[in-house]
Image (tube, rainbow over all chains, first blue to last red; front, side, top):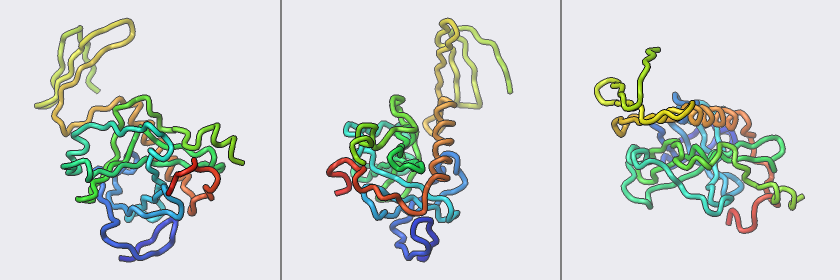
Length: 147
Length: 79
């Protein structure tokens, strides 16, 4: 199907890239259908709203930046999207990109979980309250060292 | 909003299936226990609000193209 996307303009996508969020995403509860798209720069992905072309989020696998990251969400949250075994589960976090990309942060408090099999997804609230909504992804040391 | 005064160990029932317990009171902090069905989400309000705000900011800030991240990613990332 052809869809309008923020990062790539109008593109052809496969139904298998479509995710349904029965509860939407916090702050965007009315939007339920999204596309998960590769970006030009792994391990980043795009989560593009199918209902509002201007709404798109950058996602990343938090393990790329937070070595000991553990997904810690309620079993009920996973059951709600039909997760029956761990290999069905994919999880990401939403990235906020300010004008200086070195200041990029990830929301570790509100991970996005996806069921690969059913293509249902939701945003959860992490039970680990040490994780913030603005976790420096590139790290001050990393940012300073790479110029 | 319904406002009720409760002492420690007193309970409030909401609907058919939600119970709120006053577990302990110490100084200005109340320890509240909540019994609710699994499909009813119970959140600290400020955590939910922080996530909502951050989502909105992330959506607004999202550029149309990803900035060039070469040289910014830790070694071995994205392989």
